[in-house]
Image (cartoon, rainbow, N blue to C red; front, side, top):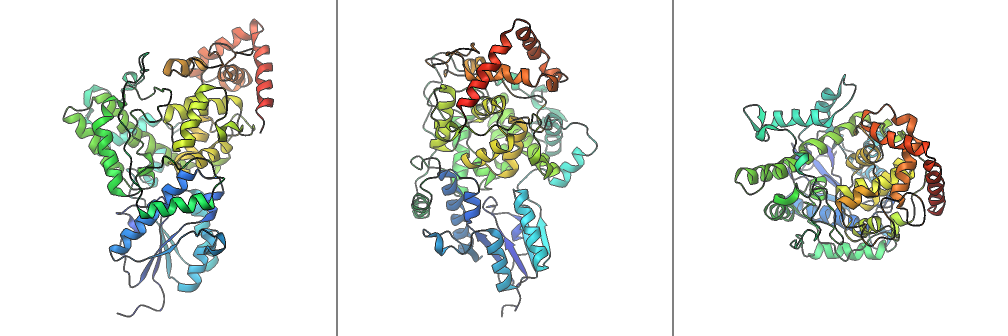
Length: 520
């Protein structure tokens, strides 16, 4: 059969859409359609991406391309070259426009991207070339964007718990006769234990994977082309194929899920992973279907190998929180990215890139970020995010830093988690209160404060913990904004007492001193 003179569908696949069951393949005909993928300098350098993040995306993409071609699905693939001068183009816009001119497709087809910015570029390209753009639903998720729109319509507030319960019922997850298994929807009260004084004990080595030829080539490319980007490649051993991702899931369920819930919020020196799954990278690149993760966890509960509290907490992270923040992203963009409820404008301190600080909790967290492109949610929310918000960092700049440094960061998941949940920049769309604390919380949930230069209970003086100082300064600065939040009443009572005894003025001065010292 001769190929038609004009291409029918230009089918674009992005680096976070490596789904073997994607809607992009529906009705695919290699004689009439073209699969298109590209490694783009613009996407790597618009924020200075962690070296491991670059390797993860490029290696997974190249493995996906190889698998498609073995299955008789040829891909027009634009790889980055060791010498930038030999790249096919610098941006998606350049490369897609070039392909349109060469192949004259009748339509552009794409699964909904994970970034509103990319969606907008696609719409502009289609308009410039007068070509229809068909945006297909992302079948990877439990909830479509349209379904979330229906959930959100008419609601004054969007509570994740309400959404989560609806999802549990709709998909019959941990349900029995229309009621939650065990009698409760949420077992958070069982999932907040610190480790005992002697620590977490012996934890097995995390699942890791050897570098094949494709990954070795990508590592060499990144080391040569991006030597000044943050992070180290010494410990890169993440899944880059669905088979590896499935093995990682199996190992988590067998070895770590039983203790995951109980110690979900705990931290410990030189322990970056503990009992956390690290499956977010696999899911966010679509190497792993969230339904497989949920099914494996529920099976572990049903066969008695994992407690309900751990399994429910894991399921809630995926079916509840992950789906909820994606829905918020697509119902609130593009205005969401501009939100800055506290009007914060401080720049990012240099130690958020280097990890060089005398605050042991921050140093430990940043060590894990630089070495692995990963720390679990309490490091992100209650150490780094807590400090960023109370210090006054611009929320969108914090999001961009998160996009650069974390391997699992894609815009839809990063923006709502950072600007919203972590920095409360949205004023309460995704979080009912600002998530902040003194150093006492970190002391309770970790061993970081032992041997640290700073004392978690002190807010003023040479031994004052900066997290404690900025906590009280933050509450004082934003007292008027926070006084109507019922969940902040107790904390604000403490601020009032500190105002009455004159302590708050000394705290303000110390906070101002630290801000000046931290200017990059």
